[in-house]
Image 1 (cartoon, rainbow, N blue to C red):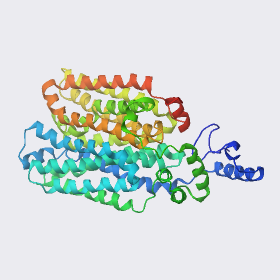
Image 2 (tube, helix red, strand yellow):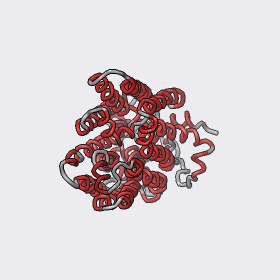
Image 3 (spheres, rainbow, N blue to C red):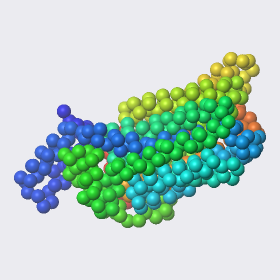
Image 4 (cartoon, helix red, strand yellow):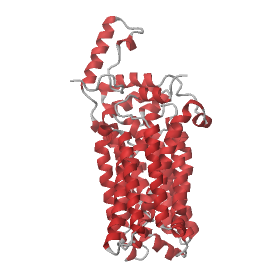
Length: 489
């Protein structure tokens, strides 16, 4: 039984005989071919790479935690720091970390390529520890904003590096599953923040504990990276082939090292060491893939998902739902959708999940519009509002949430992958910042019906964009994807 489908290119697939004809005789070729055929029969053990992927997803957990950490405690923070009722100040507490995330994401590609993936993880953990400590001890709004800004720089650096690292250390046959771990870890971080924030109304100053708690996983991330493998792809691009072979042995097992290096040499054709200039990502042959990636992240954020995460307590309170119960339901909907996405990612394909997801989100926003426009009393409006919001979160989690972070490392050529991810994540954070800053004010001025209509329209626009511009990458080799999106000049 063959380990992979015929014609599929991966790091573990049998190479054709013509790849071995240089400086090799017939006898040596037959031995090498038989060795590769033996490797094709069995995949590398997923257990070898799993601990490294698990450690990397700690950055996604922190990302989710800090997205939701001010959700429930925001009212208590505003009372203690003296800005209660000031919606602009409340928006800044939420959005300042997003401004810091923009800074972190802008430099993430250059940092990841410059110092390596492991040290980039450690670097992202440092401002998260310092910033959370400042927020936990501050007595002024300025101190809170400074702490949130520092935390944000780590939030901006972590997600793109995590996507790169997981893509580069995972065996191909579990790459989709491992990539989905990032979204699941983000969900767990959000749920952790929601659960930690439950006692905030009963215990004075509990919001400070919420910030202190986040320093623990940040410290674990920094320490665990001391024992994790460096990306063999990055080491190979640095000319450190012997170290790349050693890391492949840790990640795949000794039997797969030689073949992995041979396949890596086919993907990296000697131009990866050249500097990638920012202008190359915005003009010429690379523009299309960067445009697709940036637009996907823009549509993801303009759909309104983070507005719901940031201010779900406020929205549910207006609907008459206890905030702690609502937050639990939101977390469960998010996590269950992410688990389903993990199961379906390599079966249904990335594009199908995106289409289903954005379509479901549009319908869910329609339910929200009906709920706020309806003359129904009591339970009818309540069921529509809560049901629409939970359905929105669930449908987001099965596609629009996890797919962009998985899809982009696949469509970007290895030479520009880290820096192109940095550009796309920067677009993500710019829009995220303004959504967090302006949502409450727009909700006051425009009303929920008009605002939810805008979000639903964006979801429908996303369906059209995905259908016209996103190619399916399931079952396609990296070479096939690159040729399709970047045809030879």
